[in-house]
Image (cartoon, helix red, strand yellow):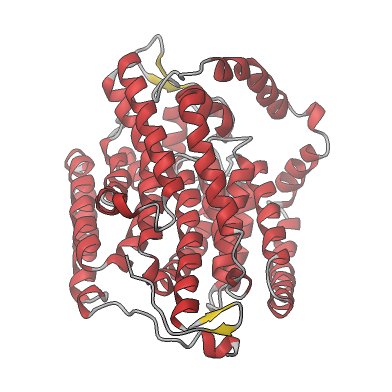
Length: 490
């Protein structure tokens, strides 16, 4: 059987109930209209509470009736919530902490229902590494509950466990992998285009709401609240999460055939470079090398051609002002790290905290990186390393199964040959590898970074299981026909 014939084997289709319809878009549209109406009316106080509740209700509706659309909806809530918060605070006054930031967590936590439903079957479906990591986080939650304030522990728990539930949900619904692939390709093309364009505008003119937010938070590491003096974080919380999500989108563009991929690449790469996130730049290189070395020769040539076309469009813009000097200066620090203050501070912080993080076998518990300053404000201790953060919170007792589950998943997704013929599946595992590489520099396994990492690990595992089912359904193992047999869909 040829490759073309193999991939023409019928696959399970979504039922009519699960297909996106006008009713689903009406629910999303109603949420958007309600948000706009409250914003125009200056009802920020109402919106801070109503938006998370409305987002959750729409999420539940999509989860039950339109599971593919639910995935795209979840990504967009994560991508846009920080901008929505800044707009509301600018119009209705600063609030910290802002309850509106609960929206993406509430929407993502809906997938906890999937976890409890499929937990007895998790090992058979390849989800054991997710289960290991989830129970490690629950262990950290119990330790944290004993040592810290319940509100702080609960808030940090959302950061840790939401991405795991999301990745597990995608994995166990592997039979919908083709639909998930199509949905996520569309979401990330538009995300790269829109957040990239906003990022460039943010750098050039520094919108008032972004300057207001930067002034209120006093985050000097983001630059100054003035045009062409800020690091770009676009519609998201900070340059780090923005750069990670943009890195993922840019790697996915290499597998896309969408006509918008070229303009999206131009805007995306420019904003990506203006984020000044060197760790994400290095992750992009790791992901690109993985893409190039794990595709069939024909697809490699197509990828190289795509890279050349994108470079032709992007490089001239990066070298002209007002972008060129800032980007080139940041690139210069990579070859001169011994004189870079940021690198020196990060190294000193790492040396100072490594003993603390590795000395406690039981761990300090989730929530231990949050403390109350002299003004009564919650601030987070920055460990500048996902590895240190994991051992600090979970100890050896929880850190080993958590990181072990992560490495098992990464190893497993690189043990399949089908991804060589599926650029999207190859991109998914390359994105996961790129983020794991960055864990040395930042805690990207939580919040938005974690949703990207664990989400794409779930996608890569779903692709693997989907192609295994296709191969067995076609009666082929190692090229030899066998009696037709089918795997159960659960």
